[in-house]
Image 1: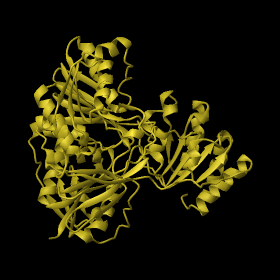
Image 2: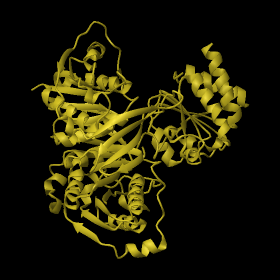
Image 3: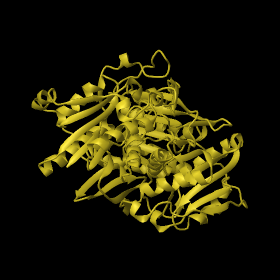
Image 4: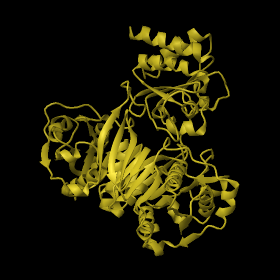
Length: 329
Length: 262
């Protein structure tokens, strides 16, 4: 029997978030084995308008709940919508991006469906019978666990952002739009988002960026974070930080990479003046290319780096910024 | 106000992990120190602050884990919690999230707290599931990874970080809240606290006492850990020598031409 695969699409401010497209990209690779339909779920007013864009990435049926109650994040309502769509689409596999929202919805929806969810996968496979297996980083990235969901259905997983490819969108494809009513009564929605506070400066988030330039104690002075920012800006990347500098208040917690911070898997991670404590490595060791700049040649960060410079980052980082700008013309 | 706080017993985050003989779990003997999962400390601290501010109330811990997790519960009691409920089974370590959540939810039903606090995830297995799952099982609202929490009579306002912004949510009690760094500064246990903790009650239960069937932790486990492997060795990286300007230029060239990432 053919199995369908359903992907939860995270929309914020009417925009589809990139990790959702990556999850659809991964699902597209699995749909062949399952032999069924590739379905997606989008929530909020105007969700149905995403059909064209999602079809380009391979979505065949788009389920949507366009009730204003799900315009902004409401944990109970979102989980109920996901569970309802999974039933309607008869999904054997249900995927969500491992974003803040995706992880949260996944856990609650799994409980609602009485099934299991493999969290934060960096590799995924399915068998024809819907058995899902995959690889996930555990113990601060010190090990990878291979996990599987042999019987529970739908088999659920969240997929780590920046790991799977969304693929290229194809023009001219169409997806069938299926509207679902809000699957719970308004009084059953007992928690709702009332406000979203944007950062004063619109900054790229470390967990979403494909390039991260991060600063640590080696910067010596909070003022010197400007050097990190300038390099990040020249590269079109985000600014990260070690726990040490967040704890002393040089930069906000939102920038912290590592345990008690964010886990990132960018294409390029440049660690400036970060020694590489095990808790920091937890957050970035799955980056594709790692660059370390540190004055201490014994710093553990060099143990995971693909490229390194031993020296004074206060000279090296601005020189890199100049070189990048020249290269960009 | 009665507050339930979930506690997970995990290897200290400094621990160098070794893979156990079965190739599936970590080598327990190679872990020199076990601790309260760091995010659970924010949950516990918040509960203690709320009890102190109210001048009344009770902070009850709940933990599902192996026998030695009792030591971690004692640490949490030493920080100031009143008592603990401990569901003991070695197999909880690699149980699926929903089975663990069912055990905790059963304790919550019995205790009837007004608020249940958890860490945003248990470090180590990093699944990020228990809090939201418990909330769904109890049919309570929840907010995850909260860095600011205000309570009022029967309701709450919570803030949590999302990608590039902060989301503010309002909800009603009872509720589940999972806690993020920044919510508070967890206290260290005082000597007095450590002494008192020795006499505080820990009610030990078996999985069957909280409605967990043996097969749910064994043959019928929904999520199976097949194996544990070490990450591929990194390193063997290229060190670039020379004066700063030249080295920086060479690095940028390599990132562009060799690694092709910029």
